[in-house]
Length: 199
Image (cartoon, rainbow, N blue to C red; front, side):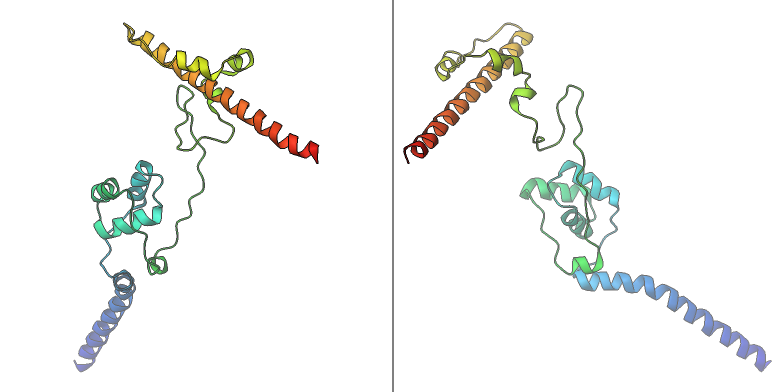
């Protein structure tokens, strides 16, 4: 009988040691995250981080994850960004627990009407190509004084006419700005060339 009791006690001790060994790695990682960060982190999924990052692409993902670890709520973090305009950067201790997020640059997507959906224009894109004014730049003898004549717009009867009028005024402003820039560049080239030829 004493051998059976000894076997049961030994088995119970082995089970307790096994449970302690397997659960301690889980709870120690939680304890270490809590002690390192100074607060008990909430459960955060990559989907939550991506959801906020898609709404606010200028906010780094590490800042988003750190705030979500504190709040645990996409809504609270989004409101904080809207109210403050930024999120606090995580402390250096954050990077000992969570690895730094490396985000590859994503290609810009083009919308249905050729409008890009990214924030920054590509280096090759300019206003002339965006508004399809290439043919008007070749034939245009537009001067900045002509721009003043077009500065006032009449209120048109239909929305299509108003939109066409707005597009025409945009085109005229772009062409006038281009002419001013070209004139400024030629003046600068002339002044740069004049001192060089006299030396």
